[in-house]
Length: 578
Image (cartoon, rainbow, N blue to C red):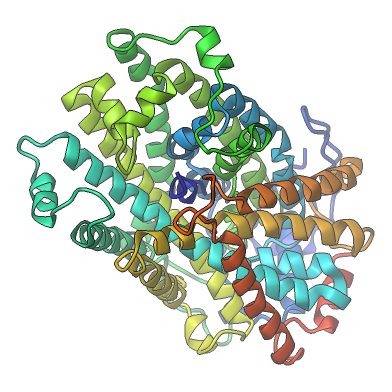
């Protein structure tokens, strides 16, 4: 979830999960040691674990999502949501301005090392693999005494993060389109639209109107894909088993996992092969010293804090791995598959991102030349200068398509979160919001679409208003990760549902370090990015975060305990996992 950062400058053997006869099998425990992390995997019957948790939480068969996603599809959800090459590209100029090349690549290494926070979240997901599960993880991690408070806070934080991310990510794709229109004028229809709009920057209301309209259209397309049915034939009232048949439209929905992953890999391979060849014929490669050792201060901050602000760019690239957890309930063998999806998608994205960072450090010219390109998306003119007229058009089309699929996956994850909250009866019109149609959380998708569309409208009166709103979208996720780890470390250190994917003796140290790391990330994300601080450069993330937290506290205070996440239910879930 990195697009919003640019706005600010910006063996446990796999068990079959489909047959009911597995209910009668004995639980088996297998200890496996793997490198680099030694993991103890206690392979409970995954279906029994999920069903028991759902029963404790009071869910009926009609409120439970059909388990149809395989391991790869779960992995693809987080892998596409992270979109590592897009994240590096969007935050590259931000990171270079804060400390230069040396700060950027060293901060990225530190960020990758600390991605074992994903392992902690993956372990918790293995214990409670339910839809929209991040707020349930927080509630159970805090135990019966503080569970409702943690649950409310994380529910509000995560809902804000994912819905605003849908808006900001779509606008990032539109920025590519508009920037391409400015740098490929001959025969390009979009340039004519921009010319009629007047000024070619966000200071013009006409230009912002074009941005808004294009963003709304792309957001609508991403939401409509998520409205495709997944299956039909409702379960018989006398039979709690789901007998579901996929139709052609349902099969199309699953393409989003393969196409989104494919677009990320295509983008990665094109840059890895094409960009160095083109660079050697244009600007030429930077020397090892220039690529790795140069520094820069484009923020105006004191030298030490200017360096720290590079974390603002790198940390956001690997925020959003909880997407696999949001679709865990509909994943086969979820206790293992969803945990693996969270962890390995983060590892793959971190390694791939590091390769891209090194690639860009050698291929992108010095900071002054990079910043001279300007534009809503500096990589568009950069690609034009390096790849040539036709080449940069093709490359940017790939970027736009990948970002659109990124948005489609974000809508998927956000809708599962909204569905889960509504299923617990908290939202207004909860029965309608949590209603499923053709196996799809249709109404929850509509709610996410509506909220993201409203957020997008804030760009019309002021680009600063939109930027301020979406710039805060990375903060709640980092804060939620830290809060969950804090609860596990101090409130439920010994009593928690047993995970099938376990870190063993590494669990507690990883939890402690995750609390510290996420606290540091939140502090950096709260910081102003440009100094001296003025009204138009103020970071409104702390203000927005405070407002959202107040709403969460009000909900926790006024909604009766028996209405949502009562202490007894939290305790029963903890006991049921023992």
